[in-house]
Amino acid sequence: MNSKRLKLFSGSSNPPLTRAICEHIDEPIGKMNKRSFSDGEIFVQIEETIRGLDAFFIQSTSNPTNDHLMELLIAMDAAKRASARHICAVIPYFGYARQDRKNVERSPITAKLVADMLTTAGATRILTMDLHAGQIQGFFNIPVDNIYAAPIFIHDIKKHNDLSDVMIVSPDVGGVVRARALAKRLHVDMAIVDKRRPAPNVAKVMNIIGNVEGKHCILVDDIADTAGTLCNAATALIEHGAKKVSAYITHGVLSGPASERIAESDLSELVVTDTILQPQHILDTGKVRVLSTAPLLGEAIARIYDARSISSLYELWDYDIDN
Image: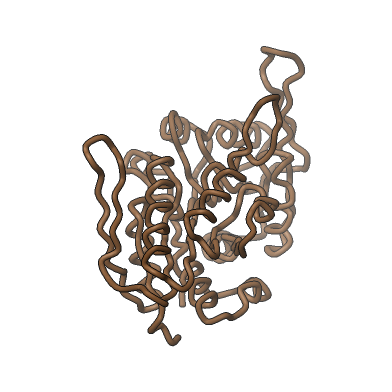
C-alpha cells in the first residue's frame, strides 16, 4: 500500500485498538495532542502537517459518549482547518444509533443529529461496524462503509466449537436477519427468543421458537448494554433444554448492572469485539472474552485509501482474519 499521503490518528476511546490497526497495516499513529480545560472543554491539536493528506480518525463513541463524540468532532474540525484532503471518521462503535426514529411523541432522532454533526465537522467519509440500524447510512450525504463482525465471529465459532450441536439464536425478533445470516454461513439451525408482556406490570413471557433441546445455543446481537435481555434469554434457553448457552455480541456496551448480571447468569461465555475498550470489572466476571477487529478494520482502511472494493471482503466468508 502506497501510504505516503495517509495519516491515522487515535482518539481517547480505545488507543489499544488504534495501535493494533496501525500495526496491521504497518503505519505509525499520527501525532495529536488532546487535553481538557479545567471546566471540561476539550482541546485537540494535530502536531504534524496533514495538508493535502488523507486523515483517518479512529474513535468509538463509547462511554463517556459525549466526551468521545466531541473529541472526534473537534479533531476533524482541526484537520479541516489544516487543509487535509480527505477526512474519514473511523467509528467502530457508532453511539446514539438506537435513537434512529420517532417512536414516541416529541422525541429526537439522534442518529440523524450525529450524522449532521460529523459532516459539519469535516468528515468526508464514515467507516463503522455493525450499525444498529442499516438505514442510518441514509442519514448521511457522504459515503458510509458499514462493515460486519460476522467473519470474525464465524472464524471464532468454528475454531472453538463442534458445529454438530450448535444452534444460532436471536435474542429478540428484531435480530432475526442477523442471526439467520450467521446460521446460514455456519450451516446450522437457528431459533428465536420471543419475549412479550401480556399486560402492564406483568412479567415478560419468554417463548422459544425452535427446538433447542440438547443444543449449544449461541445468542448473537449487535449491542449488549445492561445485558438484561441477553441474560434472560440465556435462562429461557436453559429452561427449554439447551445444554449450554454462550453469546457473541459486536458492541459490548455493558453498562450499569451488566457485570453482575453476566457473572450470575446462565451464560457460559460472552464474546465481544474490541470496538469498545472493556473496563477491568467486566473482564473480572470470568465470562467475557474479547476478539480483535483490528485486522478487519485495518483492511477496510487500506482499501478505502487505495480506492479498492470493501464489499469484496464479504464475498469470501472464510476471510482469514489472522493474516
